[in-house]
Image (cartoon, rainbow, N blue to C red; front, side):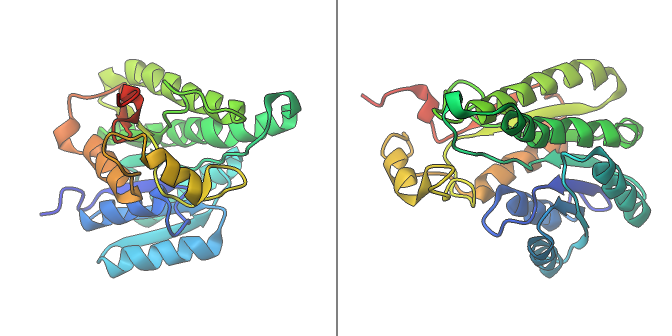
Amino acid sequence: MAEFAGKTVVVTGAANPIGIGRAIAEAFSREGARLALLDTDEAGLEATADSVCALGGEALVARCDVSDGAAVTAALDAARRAFDGVDVVVCNAGIARRRPFLELTESQLDQVMSVNFGGCFRLIQGALPDLIDRGGSAVCISSIAGWPWGWRRHADYSASKAAIEALVRALAAEFAPQGVRVNAIAPGAVRTGQTTDAVNSVGEEGLAAIATQIPLRRVGEPAEIADVALFLASVRARYLTGQTLVVDGGITLGPLD
């Protein structure tokens, strides 16, 4: 039997066709999970749901801005009505905006923090009664920009990812006695809708240049992050909590020569 058969997994940021969220949804679906898919892009959500169903899974879609607490609550309630509870949450929704620090406004900072960090906070807090009851798990998608790298012109994004990792450690310590595990993944350069955006991220040319600095000599693919998310939520990681797994092809090891 598939490991997650009968389990309900909530994934935020699930709409992008080449995103980590869609890859995670597909990975859990292959293991029998029922998916609650959250994003602001309704058309993209429907496409992800179609992909999940084509793999033999079940999917609920909920248009949800994770910076809106009421919307997160409504989406979790919908998942509970459809699937009788929540076993795993994957906090993947995030935004990156290229902005020189001296031009960064408070409202821009607040937006990035509210989506990236606040989205994790709201989803986990809302799902915790279920996770405690079911011995569930939370997985947050961070970034090597949170630690150990610094990303120029992305101070708000980097700070939000560092905050996610601190939240993971604090929640893991607080809720481990109740059987809830909380972990994070810090991807390096992965070819996604976000990283291929040349305006706000590195673009295809930037990814090609970064690949020459990576010991494995290539950038990552969303499915490779999805495999780690699946592991962290699985019984194979049952003694692992409060950790951030760096999945970067080795780039944070330092210069190759």
